[in-house]
Length: 78
Image (cartoon, rainbow, N blue to C red; front, side):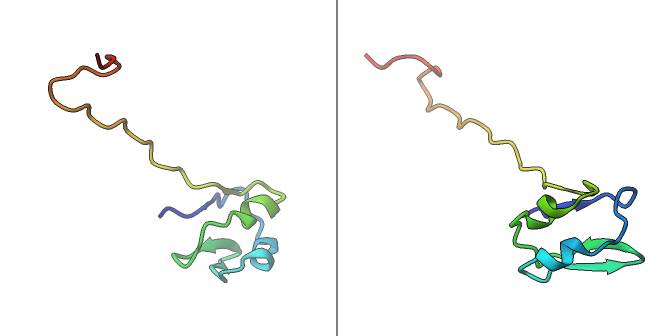
């Protein structure tokens, strides 16, 4: 699963995200927040970041299943 992303240009290293992370998945490295693979994607860090430096992960788009052979999609069954 993808984790939230930190924009280094916006992050000021304040540490607010550290205080709300229930998985202890955030650390400050070189003055910027860094999110590890231990993240459980609760999004508390996204909500608390006053700088808007942490963004939600992008979710994969879901593809519609391929219809069974012999029937066109959206064709009513008779």
